[in-house]
Length: 75
Image (cartoon, rainbow, N blue to C red; front, side, top):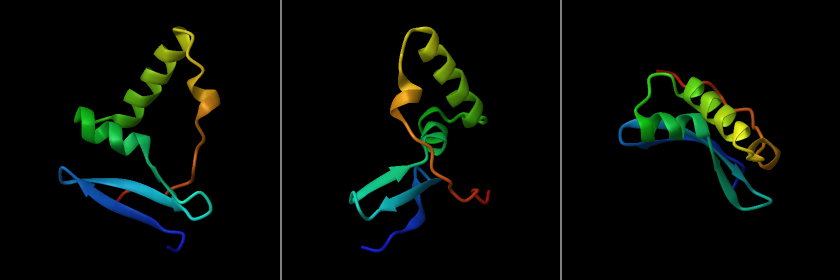
């Protein structure tokens, strides 16, 4: 499979994803997934608030995740 960036639909909502050919693994946009699962109108704020809460509780979440550049969604 070629390296691929694409958008898939889940419950009629767009979710961005990226295929890592070396690891043979899909990466999904957590902000898009949060938007689908919570039906939030502001999923990026929801994600930022969740990260802050987890950090305050002692989670090392930010040390275990990375960030990929993804195209903006066309709404």
